[in-house]
Length: 252
Image: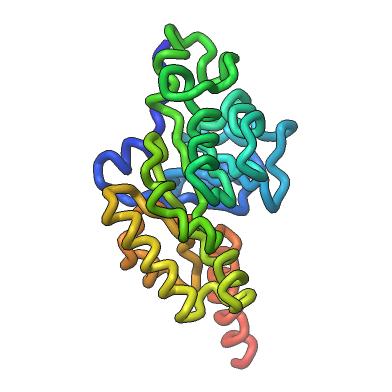
């Protein structure tokens, strides 16, 4: 049996963009999304319910519809990272990576030797795969968040760490640190996000950021190639359009 290919790693290698869909932390909703041919599902373990009890079912649903599964773990912690891979995730997203040491920890936990020291256990992705431990590193996706001012100060050193697929600039937490609490679309926040993305891409690395309903057109012009987009935004948009039609009918 061959190892399952990581769709988003291949898209990034081909110079394409990736859209990661969040807020669908339910296997049935993941399957229902299949007709849209999603690139990637983002299962939220820092702020929502993705945890060791349901990661297996969530990632299995992604596998069934040929979408890559990414789990955001709560923090840069060795065991949390490789545990997500062991349970079937094809990728991890790690918040609040503030230093080169943090980034090195993420890679060390995500990759088997000789690239790292991931705990030796066969992931569900490795069941029946010949030489899984020698093949896994090629298909594991690694994303680190740059969402703290100290991380931006340390960015040049963080970018020196190899085997990270995406350096993701998070406007939410940056808005708080910059004094614009809850205003990720504030011009000053966007300025910092854009400058950070420029530094990432200039270093030859792949940048990511949020592409919400309010900023997706701007986000697509930043130079980032990985975009996190919340399904709830698009559900609201569709419902509001439907509701506007109902209101017009009611006025007749």
